[in-house]
Amino acid sequence: MAGTGRVQARKRFGQHFLHDATVVERIIQVIDPQPTDHFIEIGPGTGALSLPLLARGARLDAIEIDRDLANGLARVRERYPQRFRLHVGDALRFDYVAAAGDGPLRLVGNLPYNISTPLLFRLLGASASVRDMHFMLQREVVARLVATPGGRDYGRLTVAVAARARAVTLFEVGPEAFDPPPKVWSAIVRITPSRPIFAVPSLEAFDRVVTTAFTLRRKTLANALARLLTVEQIRAAGIDPGLRPERVDPAGFARLAASLPAAGDDRP
Image 1: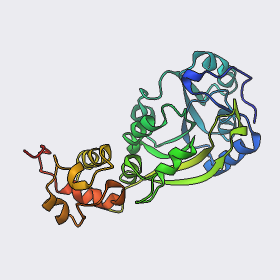
Image 2: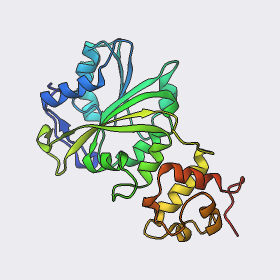
Image 3: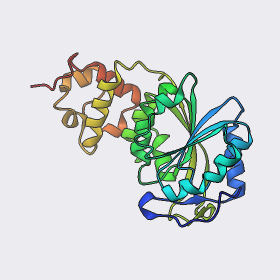
Image 4: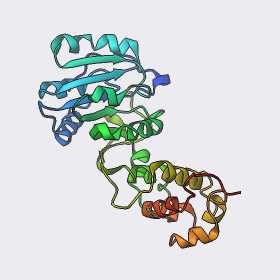
């Protein structure tokens, strides 16, 4: 599926334009857009995904930070004036909750590698307004999203997502599908906001424990969480204080968060 034309990719925006028609069609198939859907596309680039989404009858808001690319998308707006809106700006600052209006959003995009992790955390914060997300990400980032405890990919991002959503790898995409080709493989991931299968006392407490633990991930929990919990409190949550953070599953972090003082103050 061709986009709106050949343009020069800019390194500062981490741009790699998807041009492989077979990959585009496969992405559209897994997304399965419907005329009743409202999509927000992050980084539409040359419109390779925008056009087939609109062709299926969906409504589309696109966020593009590159003004030259935004100008190139004018022809998309001319073709679909009632269902396409272009927002020139930073996806990290966009108000997704306000954009949702009365219905849930479906998010899609080929996310720039240089902002993918902070953007995912930003989007998870708006997950109440989101039905699902389908993103092209660096393969290593997707591995972190779907990792299991004990592996080297398991970390803060894995656990943070587990408390808010389900993440599933759909398929991988080679460098040759992009112009210019990146030096890494990519993967398509589906993230579906949902309630976790374990009890979370509060996301604020949960995130505090997870962030503190993985900031010192090479240390044992007893040392990494020393300012938050005693060894006895960690043990009372059913967790060995001698474990490193990557050995604790998301439910375990939720139990640790439940052990924090109600006010969330550091231990003296």
